[in-house]
Image (cartoon, rainbow over all chains, first blue to last red; front, top):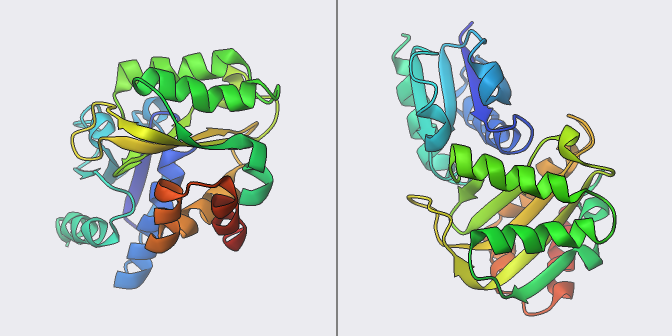
Amino acid sequence: MLKILVVCGNGLGSSFLMEMNINKVLKEIGAKVDVDHCDLTSAKGYKANIIVGTKDITSQLVGYAEVLVELNNILDIADMKNKVIEALAKFE
Amino acid sequence: MLLNEMLLIDRIKVNVEAKGWEEAIDIGGNLLIDQALIEKSYIEAVKQTLRSLGPYIVLAPGIAISHSRPENGVHKTCMSLIQLKEPVEFGHDTNDPVKVIFTLATTDKEAHLQSLRQLMSLMMVSEDLEVLFTAKDVDDIIEVINKHS
């Protein structure tokens, strides 16, 4: 199963909030994907296919996952949905 | 913990004046420091992370969630909310300027999750989110918080 890792600076607040809406999007599009969240340092030792984070975070994780998804606004579900669909399409 | 158990009336301020992001983070943090819920070191850690990683805590237009890790000085899981009189710049490409700042502190990785779920449900209802930006009275904010707790 594909694995999405949601990353933020501490792995406690922002990433959990993002993960909530990503799970909502995945349910909506019917995708079966593992989702987890963690902090920036732990992310570097984690095996994930897709890493999701805000720009400050993903820019430090280049090379740590096959696909990086950059989010600007965690409340913008439509944008998140487009980006997740686009990222998942790369594994089809 | 429910959102309305984290975010009590004396941890919410509207129409707050701050000159820049550091002062705004301090004001939000002081609401919790003054009640001995967190240490000053916690807020210093928030600012340090922002300086080194950038303004990633500005999660949506106008909204920042100031937070760090439990080991940086948290006595009790809690949250504060300030609404700024004039929004401040955090240096975020798309979500500046920031008008609403939550300060979140948790004693462990789980204690705050229920309240974050409830906070997300509040933020996803645009008229409720709008209240956080525009309320002149803390009671109006308490009302939307209770609605989602």
